[in-house]
Image 1 (tube, rainbow, N blue to C red):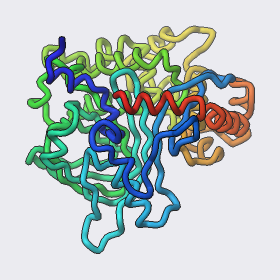
Image 2 (cartoon, rainbow, N blue to C red):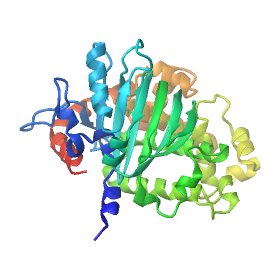
Image 3 (cartoon, one colour):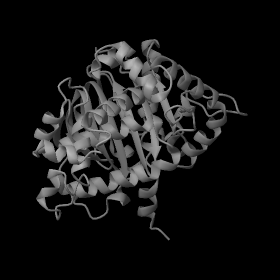
Image 4 (cartoon, rainbow, N blue to C red):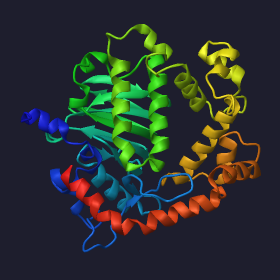
Length: 387
């Protein structure tokens, strides 16, 4: 039988964002509480997404909340209630605007991945919250915005591109400046044997780059990930984290050979990091890998080729963006971001690969998302209650 400590660690850390039921029942309180569905009725903020290029099969359950468009007092109350198990949320100064934000959370195996868009706000984690919560570490990428504060009495700052590693069992007090963050919560039992307290809360430049790329890739894939594939995705990330943090690993893991599983995987990482570059080319990729172009070409199926692979990855990135419930960019903006020459070029390429134009594909996904909500809600709420 697991020890009490291990039992606590094994609680999947959805409670860090949805500790609503088991800990303090916080989301049942107040006029704007998120409530469980009753008698099959539709609840607020839950859904499922499909997977597959052209079909709408069941995807991962997710929890989402947005305060966009709400009156300031109501937006603050909803946001404060959501984060209450983890943080005391407040304005940065007495005269500042009330905080608000949006969040989407997926469970992948025993891990939880979340993305949050946060206004300027102060976050504090006191001793009561430390002792009441589960024991896990949060690996978090700052896509934009900044954090400045203290964790366990030590100063820490984060800016765009920074990845932090922060234990849930630490006091925290800091200021967020309009941040867009992606975090993956990992139970401590998954990190046995790693010198986490000695590591510090930030990564060196090489590890930060690799971790940022991996976090971004996982989040991008989640809206179209099959539930059966989620445990393997979680196991792969934990193994990656161990290789990255284990001091016994040879220094050459940072070159990508051991860490990324080979040169082709390293090439894929570099491609995914640079999909937005119009000048992404075999010469650029080979230069980043420090190999010859001939070596790079040998890594790819001759029938596919390097640039066909790049084009396919760009189309996947657009597809995953269209499936993301938090994505607000227009098709023309996505075409610009992912280096398509025009919207027409993107639409034609997307149709050829996925069988329908991108706008129609997005619309079909939204329909799927709505039509499966009722059947999925009881299962999702059961997941939230029992984890």
